[in-house]
Amino acid sequence: MLAESGKIAGPASQYLDLTYARGIYFYPPGYTLILGGWIKLFGFGVRSLLTYTLVTHALYLFFMWLVLRTKLVCGKAAAALTLVSIFPMFNHGRPDLTSLLLGVLAWLVIPDRFNAFRLCGGGALLGIAVLVSPAFGSGSAAAVGAFFLGSSDARLRQKVKGFVVLSAVAVLTFLGVWAAVLSWQGAWSFGPEQFVVNLQNRGRELNNISASFFLTRYAIAFMWVPFALLTLLPAVVISCRRLINDGRTHAAALSYLSGVAVALLANKAQFLSGGHFSLVARPAFHGALASSRRRIVRLTGVLVLSALTIIHLYFEKKNLMYLGVNMDGEYRRAAGFKPRPQDVVAVDSHFFPLFYREGRTINYEVYRAVNYWERYRAATSPSTLALLPAANRDAPILPDVVIISEMTLQTFGPPDPGEYQAEAKGFSARRLGLFGMSFPTVPQDPLTPYIFHRRKQ
Image (cartoon, rainbow, N blue to C red; front, side, top):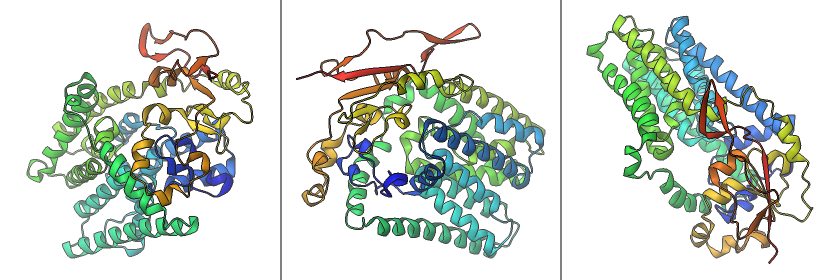
């Protein structure tokens, strides 16, 4: 909505919180501002949004290469292997990658010794990184700050002075931009209450993870092995300086541990279920490990990176296996459906750019997965609810039509069959095959559109 009307709002997500129809101010506005600027320049469409992701991904890899080669003095082979290990991370449609790009830029900007201009620049980038994604941005800020303290050759007084400048500028940038946006949007009375309501509800969900999760096969494959065994344990060992006389690797280990601590506090559930792959200090630490002066440490780093690359590739297989597939036919097929002007359409993120109409579109993933609006409404004051559009004041608007891809159908399931009727009978059961293997969780045609109409009462 920002690119079209200048309003930071998310009526498509009203099934999580009714107040999103008026504005979204509980979450820092960095990603909204950056993506809104991109859409203003290049338009709102499937190709435009995908291009944004690909450009951000390429820049992240490029600047990470520079950090590995200049800040951590990694060899070319170790740096290349490190980039291969993070290549699968696209996170299309999410703010994570943008925040990580800003974090790695800040890492590149900070000086080895006290330099006020570069420290202010790095602090501003870190403040914006947190504005884009609080969890990954704060993890980047902690990692970059710890690396400055651990790697700088300056005296302790100069290190502390530089760290204070870096931190102060980051905090001032974060608070200053957010305050300016609240003033611009006229949301000083509405925004703080929405922030408190979401903090009490959504914040608790993001930091709540069941004990049974830690014993699942998923946790073993994608948490215990890649995070605890292959990354956290080596970082703890390397952080003991007596075990390795390598200042850069030691600083990278401390940087990683600092980022982990902050990221866990910010978003424990997301971090442990896969977000640890994306922490900006993770490839920096592994790159330093694979370039250590000690042969046994260097060999360990190479083996760890090789194992992580395989695990990460499998973890992101749904995104990677479609990179070389031309999806234009499926998009054209979906775009061929023309809802009536009065219809409210629930649509998934794959087809969102095709069908978005302000006030007449619902995000299907939110509708199915985080349908918590009653709880949020109960925590919101009557005076705030009275400010909402009449159609969203008491309950979310009901979708007349649902348009989702086969990938979303498999992940989130179809709408209630008692309420909605499929336009076509039956669903495809074909699964993607590669080198003679079949992947049961990956459909052969992920963007095949399925359309459901609400039954007449």
